[in-house]
Length: 178
Image (cartoon, rainbow, N blue to C red; front, top):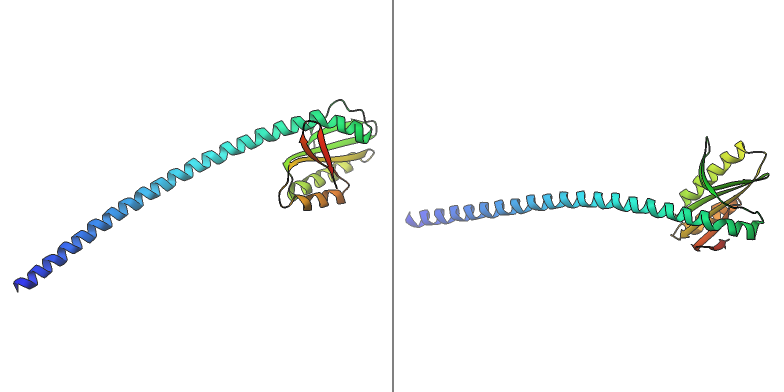
């Protein structure tokens, strides 16, 4: 009987030790969950910061292209363009660069990275512009910097609609992509 009680006490001590170990594990899990929550908050802040940086870089790229593209336009298209300006046309949308010269319009889109959705969006805006400015001839130019997997397909789509595609290497260095 004494041996049985001793065995029972050992079992209770083992159960107590297991419960203590379980409590430690749950405290560790709780701390890990808190760390995970904190990490997600940090990630969301970083993503917001990266988004802001991306927008700032995009604006700088647009400004750079608007500054140097008139030289390319003069050399390749023969138009004497002093300045491209960013415009928003009602019922059409925004163009990163735009100029009207006599009966011609030059509409420009600038992308840091060229994707298919960008190509389709630009083509749709051009279609709306052609309706509103039916009496003008439109030359469309898309300038981009970085390639991704879908860039080649986006270029094919743009070329189908006679959009001039330029890879911008910096300053006045533009490469026409076919």
